[in-house]
Image (cartoon, rainbow, N blue to C red; front, side, top):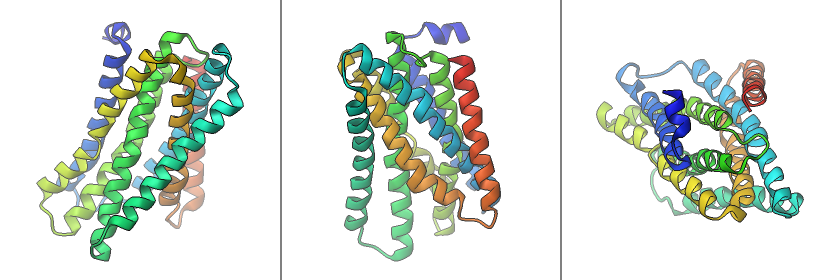
Length: 261
């Protein structure tokens, strides 16, 4: 089974990996059928671990290969990384601000809608990061391996579980049926397979874009972690524990990237 996956083209690998992350989002959303409320410490721990995983993935699976690819294309790594990282960050920042101004509804509904939009918006660069990671393997970059791309997908998948719950449970508490809450929570992750295919296709067709796309994905992921995931995981009395699990997540991803890369 593993050999079969390794023999697939990068677009199919990206699709399968992103379908996995979509499935984890759906599993998180399915918590509405089991609980009216999921233990906050557990959800915060998932978020803390995923924050560490995504920070490590940004550096080891995206930024390092971007530097390597920039050098091979005779580009200036500092410029490529600065443009890409700032581009990914600014795009998400502007998207959040524009949507925030457009929403005209009650305070509670606005918070729920903003949460859904935020998670959907953040899933786009996550899916693209997976696609870019698989697509970059064909160029033989340092740190760009199928194993590291799979590890990145697993890390993003871990993070998607609490995201699915974060959408479906508030909708349930707001009076929506369990089934509708589950469907909306699940569909928040459907953009990841689409973005994954686009990311892999861009890398395969226009290799000059690869270092910029890698840096762009890294910037977008770092923005998500700093603006959304870490603050949410720290919204608890056990901030020290959440900091610890975040560092553990970083170390796990670092070890996997170094050992498997």
